[in-house]
Length: 129
Image (cartoon, rainbow, N blue to C red; front, side):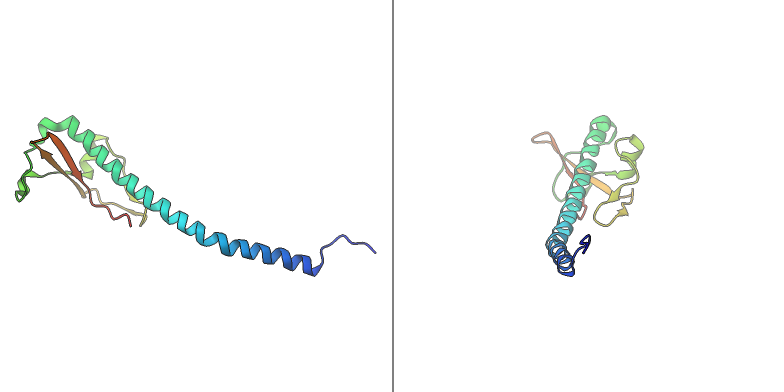
């Protein structure tokens, strides 16, 4: 008698082990994918803010930046993503990793200059959750 194949019990055991491993691993893979998308989104937000810092540094005297005062909206400077792309500080298209949709170049970064400590504060709203 020639025994070159697997028995039915061996095949069923292998399928059961593979199924158990899949049940354990697949949910963990989806959790990791979502965490990586969230990290990518936060990195994109940081890149946009860093691009704005470079843009402000290069064009500080051309932008009419005023000292920020709470309650006075004209003391906030806005820099659009289009200005950042045109200046070469940001590449286009800008894709949100969470939704995989292109972010409009009309979106703006708020820039506030604190004259007391001579520092800039930057704010860009990007939903990363």
